[in-house]
Length: 119
Ligand SMILES: Nc1ncnc2c1ncn2[C@@H]1O[C@H](COP(=O)(O)OP(=O)(O)O)[C@@H](O)[C@H]1O
Ligand SMILES: [Mg+2]
Image 1 (cartoon, rainbow, N blue to C red):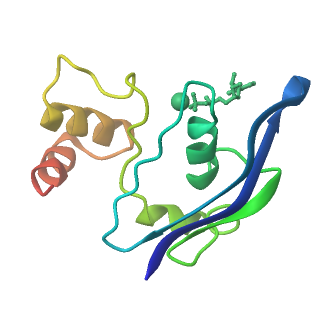
Image 2 (image 1 turned 135 degrees about the vertical axis):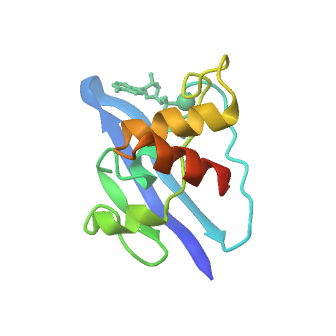
């Protein structure tokens, strides 16, 4: 089953910065994809479009068959996006990071700690 599908994604920022042009990818259930490229290649912009954080100028995204830009509930299928190196705190343990971000997302400390342990 195709769990993620992105077709012909395109994004131009202001001042005509063409960040992403015609990026397509699919990921099947159980598959791992390495998405690599030099700085400025458009990786973050692509992931933001897939995660529904920015609107693509063109193209489409399906998460488990559902378009996150039309149906935000599709994003519930998305576990976590840890992109770049500023998204976790190195002085905290992985469990403490999960607890911290869980609480930011509205969980109680107890819920966050419990869901972190379940991973
Ligand atoms: N918010 C933004 N506004 C304007 N330009 C941006 C913005 N974010 C990224 N860019 C530009 O878009 C291009 C792709 O950036 P980005 O998606 O961050 O690439 P990567 O994650 O592969 O390093 C770069 O030229 C970058 O400078
Ligand atoms: Mg990046």
